[in-house]
Length: 151
Image (tube, rainbow, N blue to C red; front, side):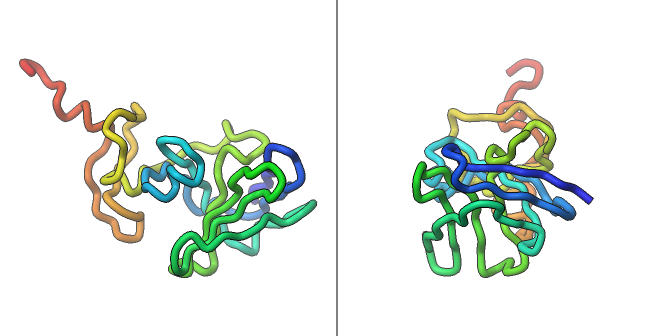
């Protein structure tokens, strides 16, 4: 059983995670990029029942039908993403963990929306949409496809 803890920037929102980490992904979709003002957002996906807020709870914003994003009302730190498509699960921002270095992403999702000037040099699978959609684009960076001998 995993036990992790995390918080927002101002420490008003604190949480603990107990249980299994279901997945760890980098998301390249426009909505996630806008939520955190960064070229990619990294998430760990867990069962909702394994998340326990230990101080205050975050505010929730419905960013689109069936999608809720939570954040600290004081400092604005994004905390989580939840979708009605996976009601038993919640996605927490990896960098909200007290020690984000201990979790390692396993895939890239919504890579079809990836910014052309940003690339993560790993060999992880890149999916066009969600993992559930399952449409694999490639393994590794796009730049590797075009950098063979003679090119």
